[in-house]
Length: 162
Image 1 (spheres, rainbow, N blue to C red):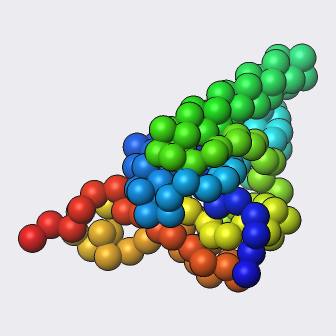
Image 2: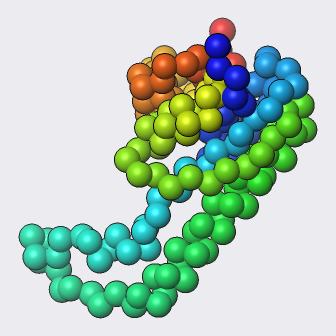
Image 3: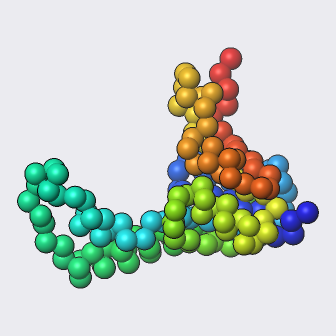
């Protein structure tokens, strides 16, 4: 049995905050790692867009400004992770924030960190949008379930309608 913390994927949404609170009620007080996955180099990706097939004029990239934007994006991810850890502490967890770079995809990154930390379980939120989409999981929760070798708790944001 895994001996590490509960790993909570957090993206700042109402659904992820709801998942943290529900996980606190379900899993009780224990160590938790609140993980925010961010995409490094996002500020540079505009330069990677193929311009010729789109018949667009190439745009010069201000590397200095792109670096500033990267720093701001990372700082925002750190702040989001801290907010998630605060919610987790209010829910009864002994929580620590962690920002991790997205190397491949968010689900793969969450599962990798869970494996590295020997997480007891992975908690993710899923937002219900009504109709058919309520029957389906979001891409992150679906991807985590598909890849994880440990228990996964998916918490829907909205209760089922009668």
